[in-house]
Image 1 (cartoon, rainbow, N blue to C red):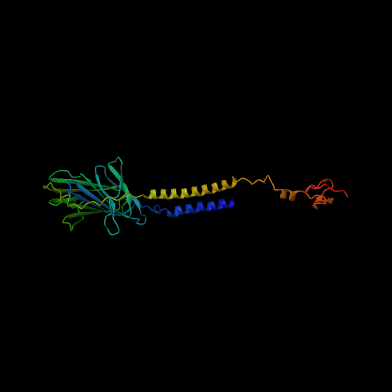
Image 2 (cartoon, one colour):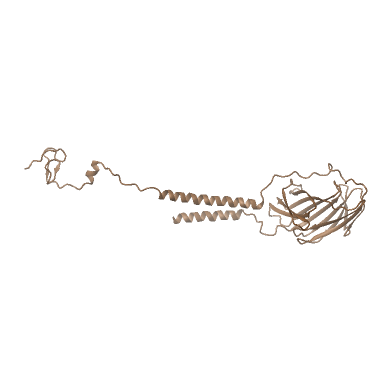
Length: 308
């Protein structure tokens, strides 16, 4: 019994070690910090509203898959949640959950397979016509080491300006002009903001919806980190319960086996072998069988004892 307990304890210890070894190192360091974040703001790109793109790189690239959360305005319309592959292409759209925080922002959470996330949403930020103004505000869900804020100037727009003033202007290969602002490290819960002014008399967006790049196709739902851990723990626990049940059934079956009783009927030969030896006083004159002192007839052949 002691040996069985030792074996069972060793099996349980091995199962717990396997569960610990298979648990991802998601807790070794803070996986939420963003090393680089680029915010692209495209007013009147393919709709008469503002398209916002968030492209971030997590500081710790070792923990995958993992969950990431970003804040978007409660008035925004979420468009895409995905991540960038190793070759820079975007993965299919990932399923996400949205939680209204009650402070004008919604937290969007989804699972990444790499360290680079990509989020797109529309927000109705433009005011006025034809002289248009816009105030863009970004609130950090996680701390960011470096932030680049880039505004795309709509086609057929004039007198485009930003506040704070533009630090860099560049002409993209797509035919658009971009105004770039750089911001230092931003703690979680803090905001950055910028205002944009421009004049545009043409009510049409810069490109038609058919010309705009299509969002990646949705991907099949995947298990998150905690789901994987729960499945692993469940498998280990089922294995332990199975081993304990097998040992208990084996022990019970041994205890329930009845002890064999001695046979009630024994053969005549066995009875004769078991009987105490007869004190022979004489022998039968007919068959030679030994006769006891009190035997008047031979117990074997029945011949009357002859007294000599």
